[in-house]
Length: 181
Length: 181
DNA sequence: CAAATATGTCAATATGACTGACGTAAATTC
DNA sequence: GAATTTACGTCAGTCATATTGACATATTTG
Image 1 (tube, rainbow over the protein chains, first blue to last red):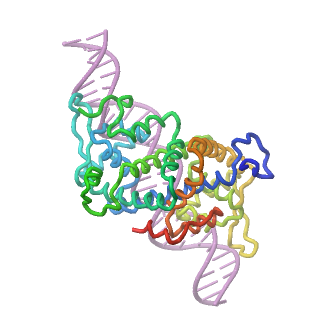
Image 2 (image 1 turned 90 degrees about the vertical axis):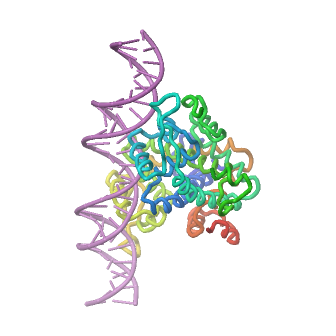
Image 3 (image 1 turned 180 degrees about the horizontal axis):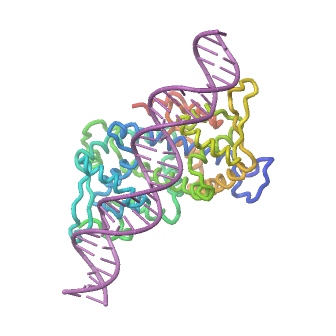
């Protein structure tokens, strides 16, 4: 039904890739929804002189206390040089503390401070408000459908890592070994 | 942690903003899903030496031929200086052409060239593949639910603009208040 | 004609990402 | 115990995308 509506003028190659209006709508909705979703946090972060990168780092350290630098690099998919500046700022402003690992003292286990938790509360508060409102507007069963959709949008190669990450309170072993004593 | 405090039954401040594990999962799924979604296009764009900004501009000019610069600024929510560089590159590479408006010759109506359409076909092809795959994995009725959710995630003030633009059904106004602070 | 509008442009700056190379401390292996 | 690997940091340079502010130009409108 949807593919049949493919445009009149352009030469078709692979019909499976031909855009239907419905799917193009989803592309655009994703753009606008994500733009406004991140906008919530951006506005708060701007008060502190932080950016989106600080938010991501703070988020995952809050969510997985004792995280190591290498874990963050894997999760965020960035280079250590990119992470370094952001992490240093967070440590210098007292939002994050580092401590040597128990068994391996080369590791820097990362933890948020009460000040970091306070900022995270504001940030997650805004995000939660928007998401809960949207779920409320989406009708019955929408939350489960959205969860499945977003999960399926993740690159298959990393999907298992992510789903494991989100289901467990701590990072899984196959990421980098045990996290917590 | 705040989650523990909330599930313990004693809301510390505003219970409506207290993060539940389910909603935090959605926050993280949005991050990973959007990252991989844009990754598809980023890889193609890199071949041409373009970035995500070029994609967005090309996308909306393709979708709405004859778009003006001012329209793009409203849609993308960026400054004209930011747009200028990207747009100039697209025009210089022959992906986009400008022409004076019919009634108002100050306007520059924007159109994609066949070369621009060719690039867009590749970009949208990758996006459509991922979205169709995800919709297929999400079960019956998921697409409609996702569409409503993403629409509801958009800032209420601009939601009508977007739904009009995308030719989508508008959400009921009386429920919009749930998104307000 | 004056004012408002649509757009462009010059200049300076910030953020967040990259590559490549090198350093250091601690753990592991030979 | 020396050599290697690992975890992490840092210096230096680059790039893409965004910002603000000021000014220019053409065109429409009052």
